[in-house]
Length: 397
Image (cartoon, rainbow, N blue to C red; front, top):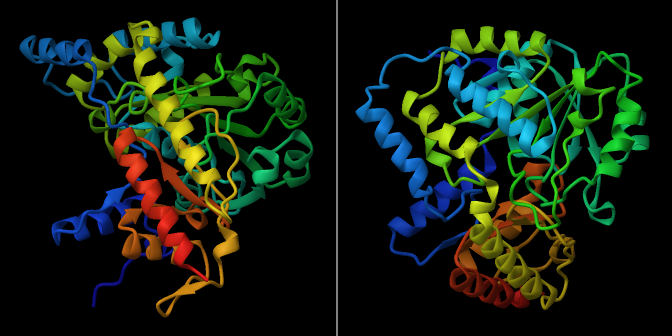
């Protein structure tokens, strides 16, 4: 009899992908399901990027690529880091991967071993903890909480550090909360990290350009921790290139070389056409995304206004990404038509069945009191979804 590995059995299925699958199954049955579960922009890839891809095909860029990425792409990423973030990463400090998820996995597998501790502020993106577990590390979760705008401070960070701590993983803007760390808040974390030069930080900045408060701030901007920080980014979110699959890191050369080695044995270099198209994205002025950012901001306001009209729902005000992460714990223990809502998982299943709206439980993100709502959908769709959710919640007693 075939036996699956302990590594696999210890791994949880991605909750976002699982809920997306359930909503597709209901749609296939003819149900009018609104899915707000996936973190995918509903915009199309800009034409100038698609034109660059077409040219790459016409120019026959269809062969194997260098493991860390084409030189001209890495040079364009280097310019982007300098232009947008004030970060000086040379080409040799940059590794291009098949999505930012692989970028993060490369770093974790390069640094973390059995028994090593990795600090993960909660709420966190669903894959952080699972990637750490694959590396046989031990996730150490710091609960941030809605009252702290879902962000940790230096005091909390230092309290979680032990002699076994090897890494900190966090995102800003954050998936699932939409919270954004200010320069002062990052400075507070840097003041702690500088005392522990053996700790590597993965700063996941994939939502960098979807920011409603102005300038994005990067942890690596502080010179004293620059050599400890791996800055992760990619083209999926802001450039609406989810299916193209390209992420990248800027890192100390030792870590970049290690990721190059890991990737060389797993996938080698990512898609040649995607890489050439991504050069166009890296070289573009982010101002071309203005209309998309305005649309996301309008949707954010719409969803927040609707949530504020729902008794028992408590939401902070996210200022980045395209998610709201409301606390729904007041509904736990309530029921309707024999269905008892014990937790956020039950509430999501109830809303899928009763309202035909697919959301994701906060339990998957490290906060079991919340649910994640993606507002990467049209205003018309969001208005209908919020109406359905409100009616379904009012039935619980």
